[in-house]
Image 1: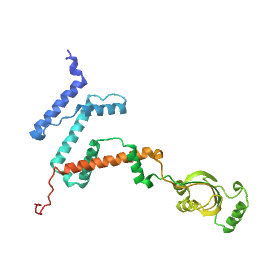
Image 2 (image 1 turned 45 degrees about the vertical axis):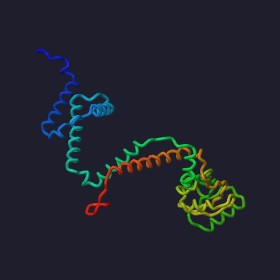
Image 3 (image 1 turned 90 degrees about the horizontal axis):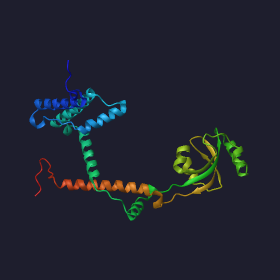
Image 4 (image 1 turned 180 degrees about the horizontal axis):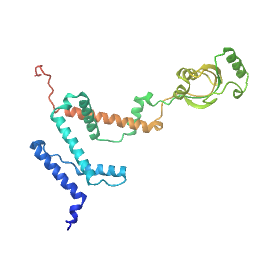
Length: 272
């Protein structure tokens, strides 16, 4: 038996014919104003490429047909949902649409790089956001258990000049801490310990309680918290300024959009 033209066996031809049949079916079953579903070739191509990456080969005609049918079903359901006004009845869907519209307006806003003066002004108006934390270097002697007499005896030894490495009990985080912020100390020892340590003067031994138990602590280095310089935090300041600009421009776009609408309250008389 003779075979037909080679192009009839091309999967892409099958796909094109299937697309035409699919669109024809929708034209036949739906009213003219909502009867045609056009599946964009770019969407099918994107799905095909993703499928190929996952499976290591290009999808065959049957798989591409399933992709088209899935896209068409989704579009059909979306249209029917809109026809029934489901987005109006569902507060979650409404919120997502409102949020999405905000993103669209903000993304469409013009972007520009901030001037250095604007970054300085932003930094000065939000000093606590970028403040450099205080840091402490200290040595500690851990004491397991709760024996006040032992604590006092060890403290006396340390104040007399005994080597801290020879005293106390093993501690999971070690004995010496070279450069620790208060936040890091709060995570390791608890907030009360970090706050008490911040009040100690360098060179002074003290008894402090942490989430682990008791410690004999001596601060060796102390750097106080201070305002940040722009060059230390320029990247973060720029990102925050750009985000604020995006929000400002988005709000301005919403205000311009509002001018295109007349707002009324049902049951209330119109304003003169």
